[in-house]
Image 1 (cartoon, rainbow, N blue to C red):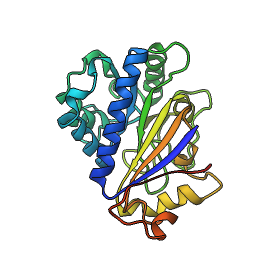
Image 2 (cartoon, rainbow, N blue to C red):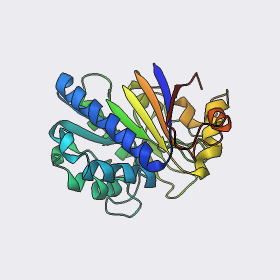
Image 3 (cartoon, helix red, strand yellow):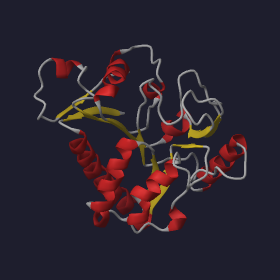
Length: 256
């Protein structure tokens, strides 16, 4: 597996590079496989990326062949302000010609989280022959090292592709999430992390050897990329050694 981290002068540059790579991969996968299956994330930084796709890259992506799943979801109605689906819909999906049948939000109405997790797992498995081999996944990282809704101390059932979370340490406590097993079957995963408030956890993720943080346990099949702005990467060794803030740095990294 290829592991690469990319450090950009600012969040805008990181989002543009990610959009370029997303677009190129989408076109390649559709040309070779007939579809591009992705799992998207919620959050402020991904929202900027989604707006860029909708406004600048809209006509470059074969949306008719894009399948959209979600890496995690808060267990709230789909029109709730905390809903990841609502954020993705308002910033991206409402503005691109993607068929409604290609969009698969996690079910958060009319069932308890465990039942909803099993429903989404069944849906996910029904779209693939064999394991749910997503082509590309977007993730972020919290200041505690969590990613998706995989928080420190939470272990999803090893056989599960989708797990229910009942006591997340940040509100809302009830959530659904794809599991380490599912992320491990994905072809490529991209972390998008920006802002000085993420600098400490980014440094720990890249230097701590015991894989204590959920974000360190994400291992896709083909490629793992971290897209960082200079503020999020400020504690990494290359930044301390004086890489100019206007320069983009791409470099491999070893086992976390």
